[in-house]
Length: 340
Image 1 (cartoon, rainbow, N blue to C red):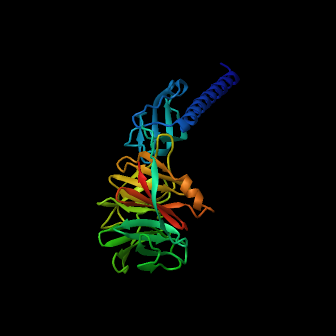
Image 2: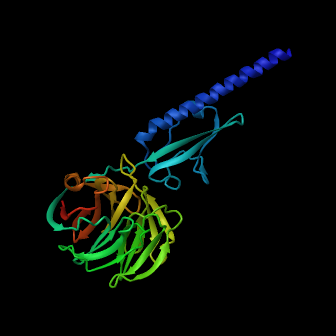
Image 3: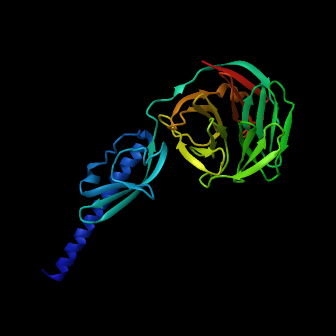
């Protein structure tokens, strides 16, 4: 064979190979994009196009430090919500193709729209920029945000006069709070630390740094064993109550068709976590074992009465027996609702 013909054949083979690789990656990309809005559920199989698997010796999914060749949505690898992965296609001729993708995983069961009715209203100080909100007995414990105005205070339900309060430094933006026995735990937004106060005197007992996995502090609650914190993402972090710098585990939160991020103020009640979604007039009821949203409360009608800007949003969840208390940033009222 003449050298020129040989070179031409090599060039043609290379061209065909490149076109074939491009077709494989295009088909994989089209498939991934088509599945992003539909999503998967745990246990589902990834049914890749024939063009992708036909010449493949192996197809694996990489999660950065982990990799699996089982094309199944396995909770050992995937979490609810968006999963950033890389497909690795090892061809029979030894070539390797890679493509980044997002795999969304949703809850199998659709969340229920939970009905309620307002049964009582109470006054609330409209200057309070509510970040954390909890009721114990007839006493509201509230954490207020904003630089230069952050504090923690308590007052009787039905009154707006503080019974006690403790101010934070001007560089602190306070966030969620929760009660654990005779202590109050409080988060800060971007200071990467929290405070522990004596519940009676409001004296500061100590500070604690966040686990590295938490970028910011948003909401906080207590399930009787562990602290549960949010950081404005789709994740909830379970922290050691004796050492809140230690994360025990985390979950990601999603409903049947939507992954919920910007999880904010939290409350734990009878086996479920209730969470505000920042700047949305809804409260989620979350299974803390799986992260699945089992129900949603739509507080649009109440929120529109008081939401006059991007700050004055629904943000405050507490329980008074079986009834829920809700309020918002700079709202003049607290609402007691009966869950139907």
